[in-house]
Length: 236
Image (cartoon, rainbow, N blue to C red):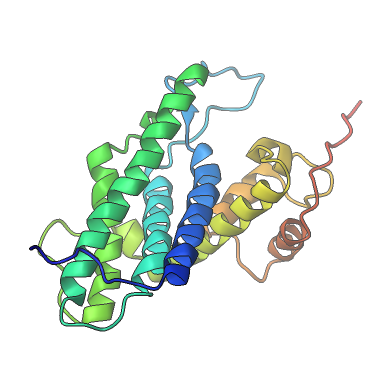
């Protein structure tokens, strides 16, 4: 008889893991939606907004954070045991496929809008690799073992300061959207009560706008208060 692929946990712990991972799925589904762009995008028109910028590094970072949160929800509940390394490696592979299943479902739904992640030029293989690398770091921290040999994770994911701050902001924005009917980024930065404009919004999203700036403090207060965006009055 083969050994189980995970420890046997009390039912209430399994239920808590299930609820936490379902919550993570919902939060990151909303965040990843912003990366599904028409491909090719609408032709550039000087009288309208420029086409959306490609954000492969940001997409990879969000996927890494997605995988990390799924891992934390379950892996941190595993007891110390001689089999912990094997359990966590099996968990890693299962969670990467869970996240990729989310990506696949999102792509199928986005076909109706002629949208896709493809605009950002991140392949499914690259998505898997960045998520595996992130979970490998978590496994290494838990077991003290060196990370498995293989391609190094992209630099933008390994950057601790900017990456962690941008990830924190991504989760804050996702939670705001989930609580307010999933408004678009455009409706948020064009709102009269958000206190932010398009250039500053994307600087904030990418972790570039300082956390001590007035704009950051005002905008995050808006998000945390769960205020719905109010459209600005058109200028005459």
